[in-house]
Length: 228
Image (cartoon, rainbow, N blue to C red; front, side, top):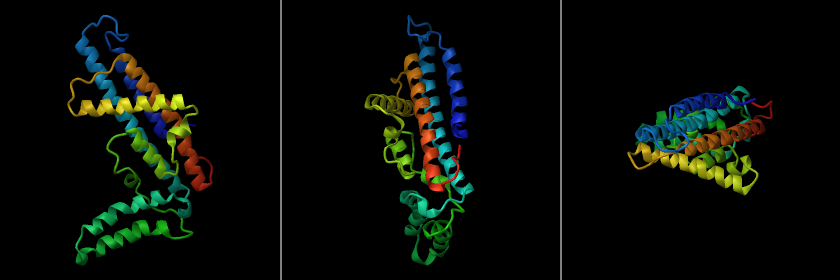
């Protein structure tokens, strides 16, 4: 059974398919209304990259909520997972004068302190702190996300052959790089109908496999029934 995050992604991708149907020359033959074809390709890249990033953020949130529901033992949480929860309050303490740190110290101890108590169970966790550093879903960022959850090589985990791994990595990298260039005003960036089809396939393939991998990572922590 897929996560709610994956179901939402699939629903969102349907929007991309509808947009592609509006392409006057989808197969790249003699272009009709080339400016429309170009705009649809660029818009599709931006939308797909946004849906992909939202999937990753939703998946992270859904996984944290599963840990909270099961009151997971904090001893089984990955070290980096716990450290990131404390990073924001620690940074705020460093930036605050000594005589004004009492409130922030209290917040740090009450919110993140229990994550380091042997035998404690997870009662509170702000899932946004795990991804407050991610500005776009570049492959390096995706690898970092899953490393936080305890998987040191997510692309190796979701693919069997080096060739398919390289192709998947390349397509996802192209998608996000093009989206970032478009968002920064680069008018030269284009995406053909075939490009968009390949990007959609790459996102769907990665998400479907990553979904199962995240479920196993959560289950390894809770030692309960899989979260989805």
